[in-house]
Image (tube, rainbow, N blue to C red; front, side):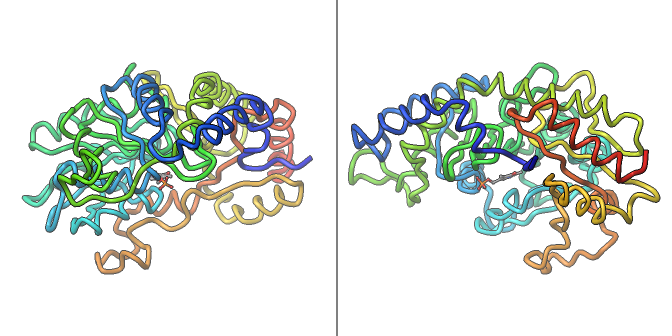
Length: 372
Ligand SMILES: *Cc1c(COP(=O)(O)O)cnc(C)c1O
């Protein structure tokens, strides 16, 4: 038996007829650019996120670029965020002339630690950008309170958290503007690249709509200097068909999380933290190896790999230590909790179609390695 980290083929096979029909519908009417499925998907996804507006774009990275521009983040501005995330969270900040300012994470949630944010605020700070990493919502209430007190915008990077909830509020609905990615492996994944900007602010939505499509209002009338960041109609049609299954898929991920948790509970592993007030959607199921096990991560991965079980490390190099950000002048030790997590985390297979037998197989292989 081979158990991948994510099984996109299993998902396709489970809804093959619906997917094939969605693709065929777009091909049949050749409405490849801004076809009717784009607006329909935007309406459906906005409803799913409990927000007024969703604007489809061609990647989560493009969504971040447009969200920064719509918040007027520009040269000299600083945006406070986490160093424990995928590089795309901050990649476009430099492209608008702004600088990421990192704040270390909370070792339980792996998300930005609200208690450390205020010390990082300067006169240049324009926004705070929490990331709901691994599908676990960031601790939003204190973040929103700090932002409010200092007159800062909040931008949620919800690329890994479609459908997650914090105190009954949906990821993407708690801030001025939020972004999602529909990269194929995300909880809601396209068959290629796609993303969305979501917001309750009509002005932000309008600006993002203009910018993603050459600043265009009418054909050949352009109000702003924009981009071609449009979502493909094909991807919108695929995402609509998949969105109808997202709740059931997220529930399946949560069940698998509970099963892992139960079967791994007597081992020396740190399991994902899920407080009462959040609904995590387990984009990844990440465990942490501590103490004497710390040196064993590579060996454990190799042991699992030999049994056909894939694992991942999200993420091995913190953003402040990435060569691309050397100019920020950070050194090892600047964000010790992030650095420690980067050395300890291990992502186990997690996707809705995972079976009980597969989970048991993963756990058996881990126990075999740990000799318990
Ligand atoms: C996937 C991801 C992105 C970027 O999305 P793309 O669609 O790949 O451009 C941004 N932030 C986080 C946290 C992500 O996981």
